[in-house]
Image (cartoon, rainbow, N blue to C red; front, side, top):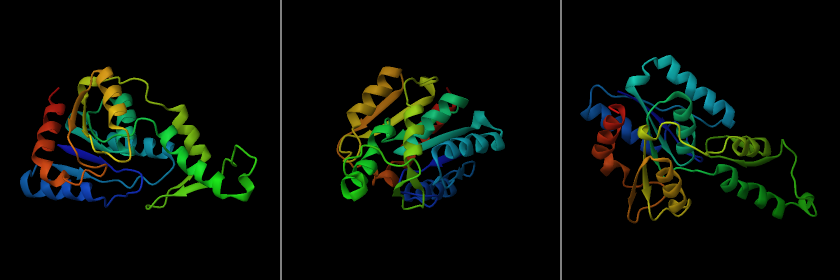
Length: 213
C-alpha cells in the first residue's frame, strides 16, 4: 500500500503526523510505503504535483491519500479528479473563506489599506512556516475551485475532532455526510490531532478498508 500524506497550511514534508505514520508503517507494516511531499507552493502547483505523483506511482488501486486540514481539501480535489481513496483529518472545506483572514489582517494593519477594499494581486498576505507566500491570486484559485460535490463518496472517510479550535467541525461533518462520505466525529481533541499516534492502528485499518471499496 502506498500512502501519500498531504500536510496542512503551516506544515511541510516533515510534519509530525507524516513522520509518525511513516515510522509506524516501517515498524508494523513492511508493505506500506509513505510519501511525504512538501506542498508549500501555489495551490494549482500543489494539485498538479499530487496528480503527477499518483501518475508516477502508477498503482492507483494500491494508493491512498491522507490529508490534514488544508491537506484534506487538496485530498478531496485529487480524489474527485482521479478516484483515489482518501482519509481526511479535520479537513478544510472552505479555504477561500478561512484564508481571507490574512487579507483582512493586512488591510487593517496597513496605511495603504485605509479606504481600500482590495489588495494588489501579487501582494503577499502571509508566509507559511514552510515558505509558501500566499497572495490574493491564491485566494481566487480557491474560490474558483470550491468543494461543491464529492465524485466518489464511497472512497472518502473523514475523521473530525469536535474540539477543533481552528475549523468548524460541524461544517465539515454536514458537507461530507450530505455527500455520502463516511464521517466519524471524536469528542474533544484539537485541530492538530495530537493523539494521532495512538490512533494509527485504527487509521491503517480505515485505509485498508478504503482501498477495498
